[in-house]
Amino acid sequence: MYIAQQLRQRNIAEYLLYMWQVEDTIRAFDCSLQRIRKEYVDTFDYDDGQKEELIDWYGNLIRMMNQEGCRQQGHLQINRTTLQLLTDLHLQLLASPKFPFYNAAYYKVLPFIVELRNRGANKDEGEIETCLNLLYGVMMLRLQKKEITPNTQHAVKEVSTLVGMLSDYYKKDKEEGLKFE
Image (cartoon, rainbow, N blue to C red; front, side, top):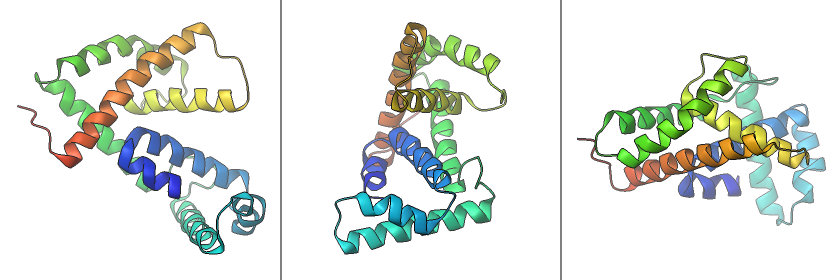
């Protein structure tokens, strides 16, 4: 919760990846708030008040996952909405002549997106979701201490640049408003 709050202000893509990890963490504990409390939250160096806030947060997320039918897989509506906001901004940036560096970064990443879509099960997912799925997958591989090929590392570097630019534009749009024309 505390990390999510910081990330949401600082970097929306990192926030979204973190929230996907939270969803998977909840699933790893079988959506059991008691297990999350005992086996996870109690390991943090927080005071009792902070731990209770965190338990409430996890409890709300579990309730939403149950209501939205994503106990086993998929993403919460709040996360899908955030992804849609990023996708909408991505399309606005591409359509505007005022963001040539973003367009250049996108066309550099496009071959990786096409390749990932051709390999993936869900060919209908959007380009930004494909990019974020790559970053999330590699993050999971690193946590498992699995090898990442040089080609994948190169793709991650390029995709990270694009997603980082998109996050920066998202923040700037929220703070100042972007002018697309």
